[in-house]
Length: 377
Length: 158
Image (cartoon, rainbow over all chains, first blue to last red; front, side):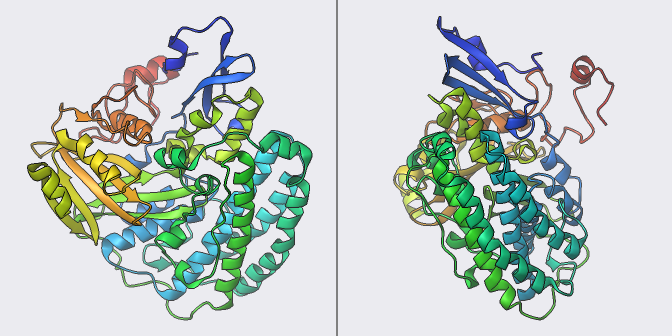
């Protein structure tokens, strides 16, 4: 089945020892409907091409036909394992366009929920990534802790996955009774949990063998390819939007930006493990001192941002998630563009997979941490 | 900004700020030279995003928008160029390799031709699809009926 897609690597002449192998779009290790065409020389990947778009829903087009508030739930369905982060980026972008700001209390609650979401997203990544490589156990532990986070989301706003937790201008819901205790309890438990995952993997000979030196990308290549998030930090670039251009309440908290030097799969693993610890640290600091006051700023019921445009981006679990919104002064965005971290990071796959073994392809797809809902939008 | 003006003269048409964000309007045919200058001299080492906006009533209907980021300066800059319906624009792939997929998406959604792109083809929609959905004259319910019928065996995906 061609499915209407031609591919450069299938039209070039193959060497005597070369074959083309198709992976996906229906393949458990491609984390969704990603299709990869591999040009192989024996077990080595000579070249590769990602074929995407199977999950394209035209989110940017839909935005032009919805009001600013109506569009908010749609962003949850891009990176659907980190809906809270998508919502934060969108709400803040529209607020910037309006010239409005969320009240301090809303900012802190947003920060807590977004950091919990980062942990949840990283846990999902860790579990499935380890599963792909053949470590069966971590996924059970990861989902156990992720469940606790989803329970907090459920108690807060009624939804677990596509949460629509925030509103433009602040929050719709007050925190529930016992919110602080729930977050604290989770954070206190979680400290030992990360260590537990590490005892399973960090010095595990098979894990090290399957990840060390696999899918290397240098800092220069990563920047040229626009790679952001943990993948960039795994290549030794100490850059995090929460520090570089603080938003929400991140400027109030102490946390480190972990980096690793070599840019291989193992280093990206260590970066994400440390990020979970840092997220926990932020949550604990934030929950100790949630300011009182209103949760929704004065933005009005009908949002009509003055004509003009804005670009706002946040550090989502997968990298820089940006929104570029053009307003023509009406209640609907004239144009809304999403800078999707998964889409842009996936482009680096070709570079990372060059010269790798077929078995490593699965590890490399996992280590980029993509969500096809966001790649295809 | 003044340095850009001194270097490129008339190719820099306007420089404004919107919501405290810098926007520079440039001549489309000078996009590659200006991009190279921004990367090498002004240290905008990362292309954050590349996209377009359609203004069908305007004489030159498209805005091509590049969002640049500089790691050393921790600053963003937006380059913008007006573009007519069938007017090609120079590709910036050789300056920022990330532009490869971004320009393909832009071509897919708006039908903008990037000259010098190594492999300009659709990325999200099927290769044979007719039309460019993010143009304003492409209705939200519109689809390539013939393609849908032939490949999916249904009348409509709506």
